[in-house]
Length: 414
Image 1: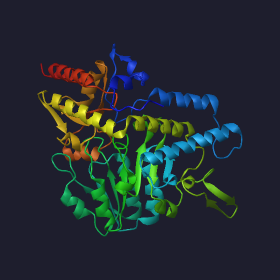
Image 2: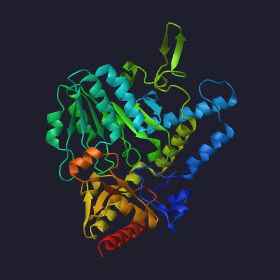
Image 3: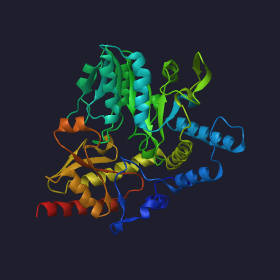
């Protein structure tokens, strides 16, 4: 557990992340790929080590000491996460592998029971593939129709299309809270009001928002919310599906097998109560416990502080990037309307070439279509470079990044 921090002390924060002491190609690591996965504090790393060293056991089933300790730690993590997003009940938190699995769970379990021929599923053009492909599969299977809300020149959802496309035929609206490409923070409450007016549900992909800002599930009034632990300082292979109890209770299970059953007979089976109905088999016990510690870490820093720091560093980076000739930034101009994600292109330098040059300077960025090919097609670009920030990043790192971009520009355009 870290001490309570009144304001963010980045040098102090950085001491908790062992990997930041690494050198890459002889230069200090600058990690600007946080939208893909974040680094882990020593508190999380030591928690995983302690679990495997001291109380590794399966949960819920055993009555011995190790099983009891593991079960308590696992369920305490669930309680922490429920409080972190202000869920109504702890039972509304289902552990999955990642946000992708969470969305698939809803598409399979809720979607196959509720979507019929002629129904509409409304998405946005900025969605990650994880929030497109499961719905494409469902629509193809059921004869439903997908419709996409487009964006304006600054990367905001078009208000006219929100209210045109969400109508009485709409059964579910699936929307990212914050774009992993544009950084745009979408108005989920507005979308939810529009959807609920017609009795449609709302699924929120919160993979890029929960780690970076205070997210209140009850205030948003969404029906489902998905996010991944590895993007919020937790381990890989653990994620969360939040859902309102009334929906979960009426959904069939996604996977069947051990742990999710109440009784099994040769003639049939019955399911456990929430959330276990959706947690078949041995879960990622260590991952859940580690995610609970990551939540502790973020709560001690405070999500308001996290968001304020990211707005500051994003604003500084955007200002510095305007100094570079030929550099195009995508997404909202106002830093208050975006998370710490900046996607860009520099002249005619391919994104992969630029990422390679950055790597030579010890700077980790992302390049490609960022699992958002429909958005790339809409913007008529094949790929982008992306820098994304977290609480351990600094303005000084941004300065090194800017110098590296200038070096790349001169290399390709001498």
